[in-house]
Image 1 (tube, one colour):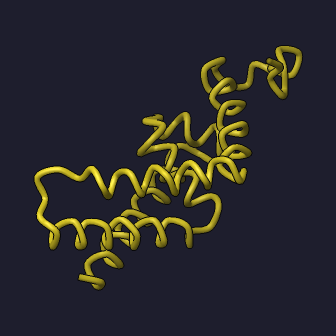
Image 2: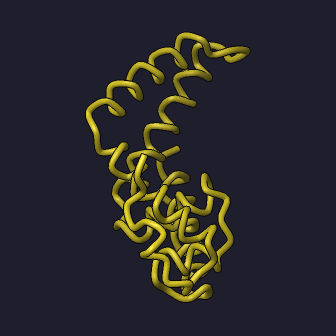
Length: 128
């Protein structure tokens, strides 16, 4: 397997972990845009709905609707906002690492994350 931006492309401007995460993020982005991923996601969501535990039918409907709404809201964010949210929540990266990957300052990454989080809370609250 070859990595885009191989070892000769590493300029040392960030940590090796951040550089490798950037490569992985780019590969993952290409995968998420692929038809194969969309098919697997549809299958997974169908299975998750069937195998839901401890929740009654009403709770499942509410939970599914909230999940759909949140996903739609995240998909409406601009690319930078979406990337910052996903790197922080799912990638569990520090704001410093997110800033390096996004080409912005650590503080700017914090501010964007905070504002988007408030926006999502507000939008989710209005839909209930």
